[in-house]
Image (cartoon, rainbow, N blue to C red; front, side):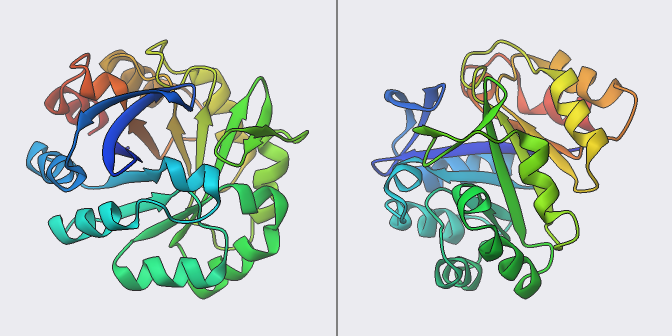
Length: 240
């Protein structure tokens, strides 16, 4: 299982928010590049970066911070938040992003996702952000009437590299992973699933790995890591 420490960007800073609400942002590092370098020193092999402002605005807002992160580390970076067109996808891949995360367009313009996955095999991830069973879009400010599996099945044969499932109701709340929900989605799909939202302790990683059925490919580490509820060493050991 691959662990993805998260760098959520708001106004150029590394923050954590509760349930995706930007008004709840807590700043953990004013230098995202420094935070990325720390994650490399901790032994992580990927970094998960989200432009929170960009997700709401529908365009890159924290591009300078993203570029600083890319310049600071040599490990792969996956990036989401406000990427809504093929030119933007191409821009970030050429800039050094290893995997571009597409969320809102997966619901509203799925053909963009299919076209991108064809152009950049395994370098596109679909983000499915779930609130009360339905997929949210536009930086979690709007709800759709679709469930996660319905959205994900659109891309089963498209060459998408990963499916990132975020449990919005638990995100940032340190409530623990809803392993049953993540597992049910993984069992229903062929695309590798990355779990996000709610991680509270190393036990969540243990339970995620121990469940029977399709293996969960990865997990995103957010507030628990920043708050010290889980250490990089114990997280990596549990995932190995």
